[in-house]
Length: 546
Ligand code: 4UW
Image (cartoon, rainbow, N blue to C red):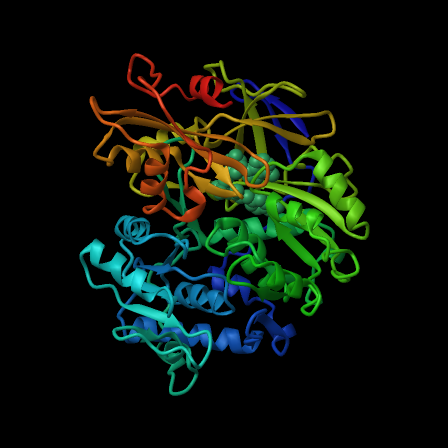
């Protein structure tokens, strides 16, 4: 599976047979087999035990689609924003909006009003789905955007009172008095239309809207299925829905792909040890997608053992590196599980690498899934040619899961793709003679905290707004549990004085909690920059990481 061509140099192809992807709108793809398991539970909340069968979920989402079109006059290419924690209603809102022909932008529900407003403005979202407890934040965000955005809220129990001005989500999904025949398929719809608009900072700068099509997502579901053994899937499995569905990993790999296979989601709105443990014992979680900090939690928690997670069969870790030593500790404690890794990125829907069956090389993030190609471009090269086995370079990817580009951002698109439509990952990697890939470093600016994206440019912009700050630069330092933590170096304006605590608190008040400057604030006289004014991040890391 190693090839050579004059224009690409060495490049790798997948060891799996190529997939053929059904040319369907994404909701039809997810519902393609639902009749086989329509009476089974599709999603259950581990806190309230609120649940929906596949038939109920299918009907509720179609009802939502009808009302989005008829009551709110929303049609392709309108955008709907979902700002929900993991609830059983998440797939209903998502698949309903898609059935109505809309694009869905997924928003982190713990964002501040400012952060939400930015995404609403940029995506042009015309409708919002949130929760009762999140309503005040969403209203504030909508005000900041400066236009009235209808907000539907999910009530997680009958005790929750509908806030004034909110629309009851359950009325929009009610199957009573709904005229399904009023639903109109969007005109000129194709599977290449944009279905999702998640946000990612990519290799540099602020978060950008990632344009993902119906085909991108269904391709990635098919690619993953073709690359995993069949007995690890199927309708008898339960997946603890702990990774956030707003992030592409939870959205595609956990929620959509697994609902499409008839699996049950046991959802939890945020990570709480007791809820998580309930998803594994009472709800019999059997396939667990996680990020390294959750694996560490499982290793360290005394009550969590193979006996209290008796159904657990497969654990799949991704979104940040995990050490071989930690995987071994995990397997010592949970000897009946298969441990796999995956590597992905929002721009690739997301899966780019997956551990093959029977793998014991835990330092590797795996092989290319079906219909995926990769090459490693040397960091100091200028001809974009791939290098051979064991040589490192920037991982570049091609395949049907790769985005068409960032929304309205030609400049970013130009730097993100190399000629021949190769998507640059911003990660440094090599592969061995067996086709196993190893991620060795991240050359892009991105900081990853618990697998979440923290773009330094975003924190630098917040810092620069501080009246006492002249300049600031942010970078990641290693963190024992979270993977990384953002650290800032700050230059104060002449004559100003400030404490690290003051700057920390200023930032903490303006960003989601995982973006806080947990790595500390260091005052300096100057931010190292190159002659064109670009921050020299490598130098920063070397100089200020201790
Ligand atoms: N090792 C080292 C890894 C790894 C990694 C990601 O937020 P995004 O855009 O996207 C993700 C997606 C992760 C993912 C998706 C599907 C899947 O199956 C899986 O594993 C089971 C994981 O995180 O961030 C992309 C960036 O995150 C880093 C890397 O820098 C990448 O460019 N990253 N996975 N296994 N680093």
